[in-house]
Amino acid sequence: MSLLPRSVPRIILRRSYGTVQSSPSAASIASRIPVALQEATAATVPRTTWTREEVQQIYETPLNQLTYAAAAIHRRFHDPSAIQMCTLMNIKTGGCSEDCSYCAQSSRHNTGLKATKMSPVDDVLKAARIAKANGSTRFCMGAAWRDMRGRKTSLKNVKQMVSGVREMGMEVCVTLGMIDENQAKELKDAGLTAYNHNLDTSREFYPTIITTRSYDERLKTLSHVRDAGINVCSGGILGLGEADSDRIGLIHTVSSLPSHPESFPVNALVPIPGTPLGERKMISFDKLLRTIATARIVLPATIVRLAAGRISLSEEQQVQCFMAGANAVFTGEKMLTTDCNGWDEDREMFERWGFYPMKSFEKDADASVSKESAPPSANVSAAPAAASS
Ligand code: SF4
Image (cartoon, rainbow, N blue to C red):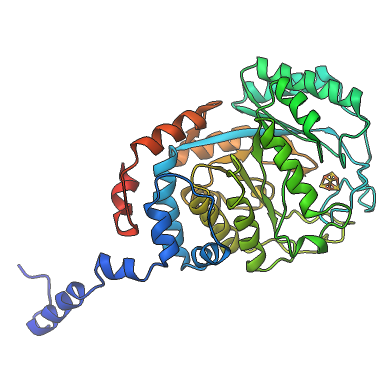
């Protein structure tokens, strides 16, 4: 029996089918995708020859197409269900001589934060054990220093912390400000997995945020880290007042380094009262998502970390970020001086959406396998097949 009311003439039914048949074909959809994105979607290995214009083309792709492509690329280079849980501990709080406009730990801003001495090694190892017991597979330690000059005893203690955490079978990352070649080698010998040193934003916008050290000094530290054989962790902060072109500039800089950082943290500014950026509003979610998706596409084998500011996102927004290529989070009681999503909360979220925690050192093995077994070419219209594999 027809479900159509008798009064509906047959011609309308035909016209309705006609509309479906004339919907855009996969080929015509693909033809509207920027060339740079089409090439990125076909790539089976990371490339370091991106031009800023290409990164811009990708960043400016309509958001639904951009996240769709990012999801397809994510599946080629990573297990899309695995998300790394990391814990970040502040091992030396406040009193920093730098003037980073967003930071509660700069001695130049009146934030009420009390400077502390460096935490004892045993306390740090105890915190790492707790993080591991709760599912974190990477333990990161941050110290509010400009650099490591004249800090021999501190470096000795940090090395003990690094070795101790490695003995637990966890990945270990530190962020200690600028380091030279020898300090990088010493940290490598202690067993350091990764060194974090964010570029924060584009080269052009950077001087409006920090004046006490240059962009080139930051890049120099990254090259010392790379030369020592330590993995590079370097990303940015969104919501500093930067423009789209600055987010594009940041991604372009890291994507055109001699090799891509193994880790790209995407932070959303958490405005701290008393800092020059204390009144800023959080970055809009669409810009955050667009940045994550672009980073995933341009840095396909890199771990993209959804870092500071995650606590302000809804669960659904976080999941959108994971689907667009983010595959690591910071979990625990605190993230440096700001609040952080807890382990239980994250575990429950993972279960609800079908994610599971990434194992330590899993990524390197996975990436090489994925790259070798990736199809010789793919395009945006092939994404659904890749997505369901
Ligand atoms: S160098 Fe680090 S700790 Fe020091 S002010 Fe800048 S962000 Fe804060």
